[in-house]
Length: 163
Image 1: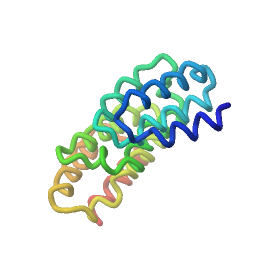
Image 2 (image 1 turned 60 degrees about the horizontal axis):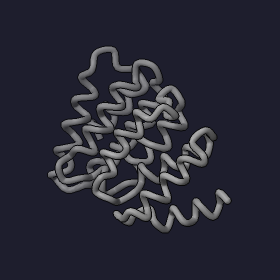
Image 3 (image 1 turned 120 degrees about the vertical axis):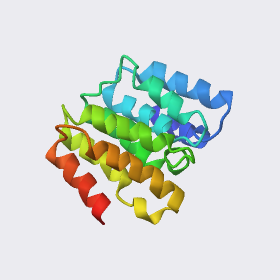
Image 4 (image 1 turned 45 degrees about the vertical axis):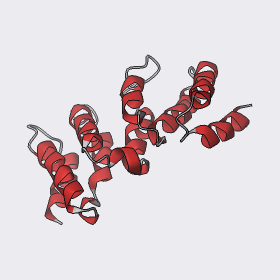
């Protein structure tokens, strides 16, 4: 049943192993048409600590069952990545930061509330080391410089930069 499958996926989620991939594929095949359960699948992909997480998430955002106009799809994927995947979001290259910033900029014109919710991933940026602070500040400044940025997102970004 689904509960048992979710328990098994939770146990496998951080293993970079073919068993994880097979279990996720089986779960996806069985539940992809159920929008609520599909979000559970997205959450596993967004929170895994395996190194290919971001690449897999980028592919998932192109999946025909993924709808970027559906806030729950965004919350399960991008917000989960930014808020709950410390290892990959805070990758030493800053690629996790630019990934989320790109999507904030892309989503803001059609859903400012969701975009500003994603921007909350950056709120505690001053608590990180100076290297990560610099990488995050760069993305915050990039988002803030976007023409016609919504008031919601602008205020959150501006407040983060001023604190």
